[in-house]
Image (cartoon, rainbow, N blue to C red; front, top):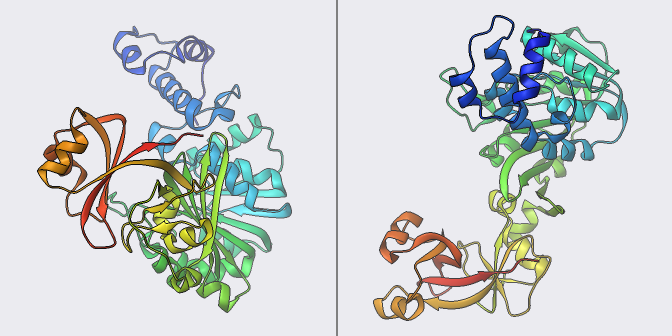
Length: 400
C-alpha cells in the first residue's frame, strides 16, 4: 500500500473538494507530492461523500483506484445486509475487495475474517479497518478455496461477492460465469458455514441461480432510490426442500426516508387470481426491485389494485393507495395514437416524461413521433390495455 507523505496529505486536505481534472492540468510538479496518488485520494473521497458518507467523514481512510470505488457496495446497501444477520461468533468474507460490506458485517461478530488474493487490497484493508476501529478483524491474503480447505472453523456466516466479469472484462449474468463459481464451491462452503450470503449484480438470472445453487431460502433484490443495485441470496447449509424450490423474494427499495419492503413467494404469485381493468383514477408503477422480481400479481392482490393488462406491469385503482410499493400517479387522460386524440390531449405540451411498458415502440421512437422533449411535470405511460389496444396514459405524479 502506498504511504502518503505529509506534503501529499496536506495537498489532499487543501484540494479535496476541487475538480480533479483541473488539478491534474494546473498543479506544478513537486517532488514532495505524489500527485497521482493525491488525485486518486481526492477522487475517491469525492465518490465516497455520496456513496460512503461514513467512510468519507472518517479521517485517515485511504481509497483505491476509482474503478474499485465504482464497483464496491454503497453504505446504504452494506447497512441493509448487516441488518439481515443476527450477532454471532465468527464470519468470513471470502472476496474482501475494498472491504465495505465486511466493515458493516464484522461488528456483528466476535471474530471476522477478511480474505483477499490481492496484496495491495489486503494492505489497504488492514489500514482502513484500524482507522475504523474494527479490532476483531483478521486479514488473510488467500483465495476462497484454499482458505476454506485449510480452515478448521465453522462460521456463523460466510459472505461472498463473486467477480462478475469474464476474462475479456465482459459482464456475466449466470452464477457459473462468476468467480468464484458458487456452483462448484457450494459443497465446501456449506460444510464450513451455517448461513451463506452471496451478492450478485441485479442482471443475474434469478431462476438460473435458484436452480444452480442449492438451499437458497431468501432472495433480496435491493434498490436505492428506485435504481436496482444488487441481488442477494441467503443460503442455508441445512437443506429445506420447500424453501429451496420456492424461496421468499424480498423487494427492498432504500429511500432517504426509510425502506419500502414487499415480499412474496414465486409459487404464490403464479396461483393468484388477478383482477384487470382499464385505467382508473390512480396509476401505479411498481418500484425497480419488483420490476426485477416480477411479483406483479402479488402486488396487485396485496394492495387491492388491478392490473391494466397481463404484461403491462402497471396497476390502477379508484381509491388512492398511499402505501403502494412504487411511484404513484393521478390519471389525467387516456389517448389512442390517432392524430385527433393526440392533438386533443397533447396540444400545448412541449415536454413529458415517457415510459413504455408492453408497447411496440421504444421511448426514443415515441418521443420523436410525439415531438416531445424530455422532462416537465407530465408523465406518459405508453402501454397495452386489457382489450389489447395501445394507449398513452397521461399522469401527474403524486409526491407524499
